[in-house]
Image (cartoon, rainbow over all chains, first blue to last red):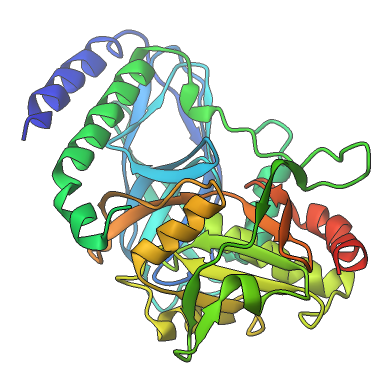
Length: 153
Length: 224
């Protein structure tokens, strides 16, 4: 509706400021939580080692209906979740997907997404070529505790 | 206090506002520093008294509100959980991030700390009555512990309970990508009540298994 012009404007603006330099992306191995109530979240890290900005625009897998880019925000004691069109990957920065922040939400994971299983994810970017990584399925609490333990996070 | 109906009818402007905020956020992030990476969810700092849970500044007590358990029986919060310390959490079963981590951490820590559900009630109140059927709540809580109590009721009653605790009410955030309805905002913290129904401390998201292992035995010893 009235939002569409804004989105178009954003797309133009985002494109304008990412055009210089070259992104060089490095994607960590991924961990997915054992699904609960039809969804699961995936933890991973993307580092942009280059001198040009990029953005994560989509993540594909054969192991679920789809994967959404989400961010949990906690403000004034209230948790809300927003769905993102893309996640900026600025030059020289590392972006972490983990509980309580940016995360990849796996929608309706397949039956084979069980504790200990592995599956492939393909990440698609605004500028760089797609990158495929492997996700291991872990207990949600173990995954969350380890992700929150990370001192750099 | 808005009914579920009126909440629905006011949805388009809310969704539009959210989308505009989202666009504004993306705009800010597009060229700026990596604000997307910023999230602080370390373990809780122990207070001078050693507690990890955060003391409440204002007096609050167990809401006077009557909900239903998953077998359809009426449960008056201020009566049913008197006599035992209680951890109360408002969430929803489709909640993918905050809710299951809180509940899994509490369940795991209770086992490790040797705290029995006989001595501590753990209560989950759904803020999503449209989707959270009794069966769904039962199935969901079984992932953590069958001893957790799952409650539901009309949204107006849940909103009233939240208001009595001075907590933010549920808000509809827009379509759920699974096509099942809407994503919902809810309080991010667990609230702890003593056996007299006084709310004493809260545990925000970021409370770790170790925080609970530290606090749970004290809840039973000092709040019973």
